[in-house]
Image 1 (cartoon, rainbow, N blue to C red):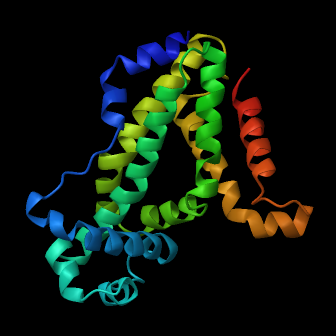
Image 2 (cartoon, one colour; image 1 turned 180 degrees about the vertical axis):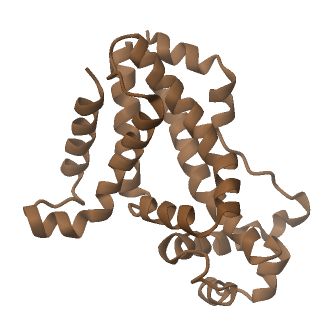
Length: 224
């Protein structure tokens, strides 16, 4: 059994990892419309950034009146926050489920499962997320502060607790945890370079085999 996993799952950080958006009972009948708007907004904001996207553009692509955006989200910033909740909430819940599923393993196998999951998740869940995050870091301190407090910090606490446990067990390289955390997450940005990788190396970076090879490469780099 993984002592790292058991210790993590008994703590508050793991319990706070799962994301559950508060539902508004008065608007449950129009929940499908809200989900449609958020789905379009998530893609638009991640692809083009906050300033380059208008609520008119989102309402048109979603096929709904713009007044429904005001009804569900208030101002444009409310829609952006809902879109970020959708993306990062999906990662948090997938990560929570992955940790839960990695039962009955020793510490080394658990660490390999966690590192491989993080290193490859963007491949099928928006591979350009690091580009979008760089733009948020550059453009608006208030938006970044909201995103960090609501989503990034809960993820950071769990991941660094796992990596610290791995270091204590002599399984993870002795690198400062903030550096190790960002090395791991930035490694997933490789999937946003699939066109370049194909042109330079002739390798199909969208293939499942590449995703598995990349996960194993990151595991080999971070673990002893």
